[in-house]
Length: 151
Length: 140
Image (cartoon, rainbow over all chains, first blue to last red; front, side, top):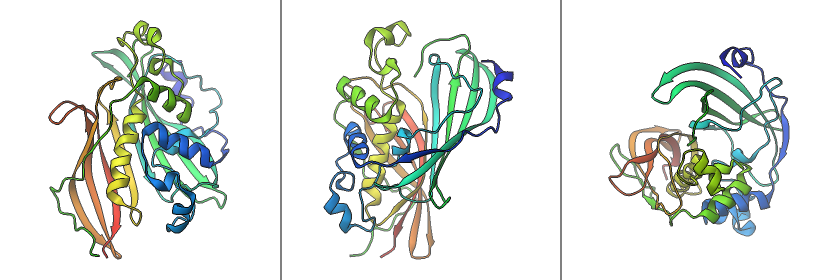
């Protein structure tokens, strides 16, 4: 895809996808990071906390399915994750049923020492069943149309 | 017990992680659903010009998140957290996360703390991620 192809998709949101937050997924994710926080593993301990249930780590929403933006064909190579920024409104807890969606919200072309780059800004939204915003994220992905290594 | 009162210039409690391993990258791929082979397949990463597999940027961000949640404790809340991915992390690297308080405000029984956060391979070394976080902790 080229700049104009991305520009055509600006502001088009994916259809929200239902994501169920599973205990096992929380534990596996925390274990991969090597974070021993008992709120991620120990149900009794979590039940005594103000959360009442197992809690998901701050970057857990990375595991969600955000659906597809119709017409967006992301290359699988030549991508560099540049930045990630989260805004948290409510904790994510085991058993939550959440709806996740995303959109391309900005696109720019730059020339740098790595050659021609297309900067893609994606905005991610996670909402609960009541339609309340749980968290938002912004991700900047650098795409080099001529290819090359990735970070 | 009186809660810790933060002031600009205070360091957060740093967190040093065990060396990143290839097994950990496989586990993180599975747990996160990010199966880009540059993180797990040595030949693929070499062909991509990376000289070998590299860690997911989001894994390093997860390390910084661990430092933050340890600092914040159960009664506090992380409000925002963002990083720029600056440099590559490879198996064998020992990552230390650290942060410095920039601003402290008081709001409705909470102190709201904004800080710079980062991760580096060793103190004084180049930062692999660099960012900011805002959290709140009850005043009492």
